[in-house]
Image 1 (cartoon, rainbow, N blue to C red):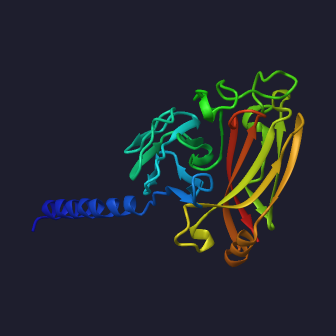
Image 2: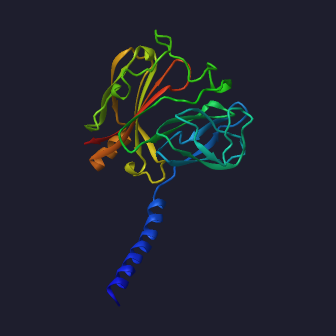
Image 3: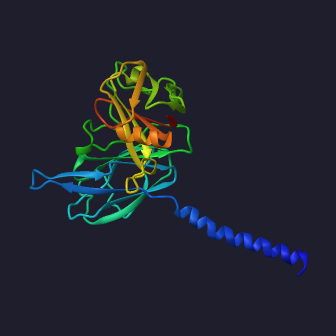
Length: 287
């Protein structure tokens, strides 16, 4: 065998190996699943929810939404940086957009927080998809207007602020610089602060800590599990500090692994309407 021939054989072998490895890598990425569930009994006693109510993916990721019941449900996207691309799902803004026994997927191109209701049961069935960029912090201002009806208390796009400024401008003072949150912290709690502008005064602040189900040793858990939550019903303008303690499950995982990767999701919500500003940040908590 000549040297040139051997060279081409090696190249072809490497390409063949790559074709085998690439599908394996792609197949290793998990797709979160959110299902419609119904519980209770009787016409007035039945309750409805999305289970789990939250999921986290990276930009370009896909989430499966399904309703494997005889009760009709649909999906209404009420906030987010854009409307995700969905297939096989009854998506709309009206209660007539519904169906039983369906399953489909939605793909999320842009980082941010996407909120959706059931078109039939409204805010009773609220779900949230957090789409992360490749690390770092993302700040999203929803561009999707609310369309009124049972899913929008104000009937106006994005809700209105309760601050003295009358709702104009961003609730954050300085954009991404408003969030002060170290990417590496120690102990069973997360500490940080957010600078609220006059437009955000009076808003509700919620800080949620999300960890992957794998890090919690829960094989059948969703891709993200909430392991901490902090809520203030009304914030003032200025720097607002917060400290969010881990739940018992989160503390157990931190002790076991000595480190815990978290996604911190911060939402400022006006008195009426869905969150107008959401900030997400990735960090590592060390024991």
